[in-house]
Structures are given as structure tokens and as C-alpha cells.
Image (cartoon, rainbow, N blue to C red; front, side):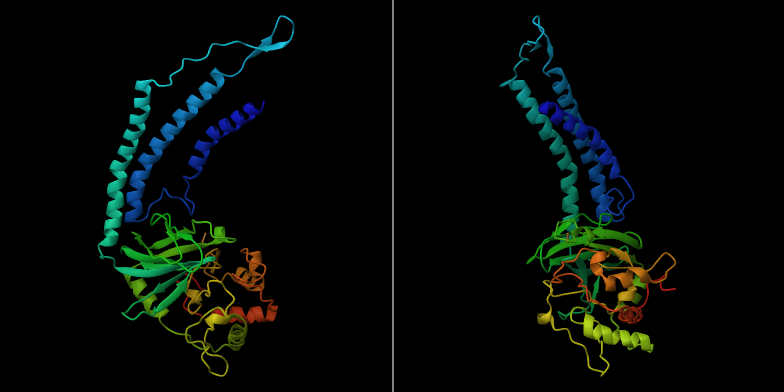
Length: 388
Ligand code: CUA
């Protein structure tokens, strides 16, 4: 009876496998069958063949398995004394040591793997070769940390980056972009299914990954290595702009903070300085006395010692680890989620209850939240089509 349950479970798997396989063929954010750039086009060209071969072999094994389970199952019948007894059956033909069979099941898999290698090895060399060629048009350092992505753009020769941003990785479309992947805490994995294969992000190492988006657009990303509590929420987006839009974006991102005129926003600045500036940087931010607000990195309780730089928050399309849209479909600020994020972040994304990591629950009053939202809205230019 126990054996039969196991058999039923395995049969269920055989039935479920094609359904799961088809389930992956959708237009969702983690769809690996919709390449949008030269590197994923190369990968896509191979994976159809590889999956077809793997599926054919898997199906063959499953059919053989089912056949053998049914053909050689234990049969019972009523004996002359009325008791149930097993039906005697001769052992099947034994093939142990059969030279021809052993050669066959060695040579056939080797041939299949050789055929796969024939296509995949040149593609691997082509992608790595493009990476080694130093022809990249642009390079961005990408930092993974629990549980969001930061990007640093160094536009000149000194070691200090000119632009530090988060969640939305902005690149020019139609160019090879080299990403230098680094981790500030544990192992993550950077993955934009439409633009590149996945690559682990490992503390103490720099891994290079080339991406290219053929057309301007927005491409979703998801951390692909389990990295703790909010791993599943560790999302991001790649925003590919035309050359002229990207040049404008670069200029805008290098501008520092401008003091707002609105009194509500100024009150929000004071809340920000006292409650948020321990972790979040706004370049050039000044307090009410005109003193520049400096980040005391050593005093921060965060393991990664970093929180997103908010100088141009409004230029991004998402916040909260890329999970929530900053604007609704009409281009208006997504005020309900932004307020809730300030009110109780762990109601949107799991956070450590001891506030040691991630966005802490600050116990802000509703008045402070309104002031903060008014202030945050003055940070940077909304992306095209938003902020109406
Ligand atoms: Cu970062 Cu999973």
C-alpha cells in the first residue's frame, strides 16, 4: 500500500511536469522565453533545443517507469482455501553485464550532451568574449544588499561615483552595458530575465555581467538567490532610455538638493533630518539652520550600513525594494502605498522585528507622514508620463 502511494505521487509528478513547464511560458516578470536583448537572444536560441531534448528524455524515462510499475506489480488472487495469495511470476530477463546495452546507454547520453555543447559552448564564448573586449559603452556598479539593489555611476576618473541611485537601473538602449556586481552582505543573484542570464553576487568579489536592451523600455528584475527574510520581495527594474533621454537623465541626477518653498515640504524636511537621515542620504541636504546633513555611517544599525539614496527619489518608477509603483496608471503619486510604507513598512515587506535591518517602523504620526510625503515629492523630476 505504501509503495502504491509513492507510485501515485510519482505519477502525479509526471502529469504535473508538462503543466508546470507550460506555466513558465507566460508573459510574466520572470518569463525567460521573451528575450529583449542580444545576450538573451543568444541564450534563447539554445534553450529551446536543450529543453526539447531534456523533455524528450524525461518523457521517455517517465513512460518506461510507468510501464514497469504496471507490468511488474504484485498481483493477488484467491487461493483454493479462500485466502489471498500472490500470483507466482517468473523473474524478468536479467540484463546485468549486457555489453551492447551498456555501450548504448553510455553513448546515447554522451551524444546528446555533445550536441548540446555544440550550440551552447560557442554562445558562452561569444557572450564572455563581448565582455572581455572592453568595447562596453557604459559601466555601472551594482550593489546587492538585504533587500534591495543600489547602483553607482562613476562618470569620470576619480573613485567617487557621481550618481548613486536604487531600484531602477537606468541604462541607454542599444548599448552594451557592463555591470560590476558586488554584495554588501550575503550572496544575492542579479537577474533580468529579458536582458541577461543570471549571475551570483558574492561578498568580497566583483562579478561582471553584460546586459543590453535592444529597445527603450522597462524590464523587470528579481533577486534569484535566497538571501533572507525578504528575498522574494527583492525586486528591481531596468529602465532603458533613448540616448537623448539618457543624457538628460544623467544631467538631472547630478544635481543636488534644492530647498523647497512649500512650508509643508519644509516641515517634512525637518522630520526627515531628525528621523530618516540616519540611514538615507540626500545629496546637499541642509537642515533648518542651513547646515549640511552628513550621514554618520558608523552610527547606523544596518548591517549593510546603507539605505537608498533619495536625492532623486521621484525620478524612479518604484520604491520599497522595487516592489511598489511610485505612480499609478494615470501618472499620479501612489500616495496610499507611500504613506503606508512610512507608517508601517513591515505590513508591505517583511522586515526584521528588531529593526536591525531593512526599513524600521519609526512610529511616525499621521501629521509627520503628510509632511514627509510633501517633502519626498520635491526630490527629483518625475519620469516621463508620471507626476501629473
Ligand atoms: Cu537578494 Cu535574494
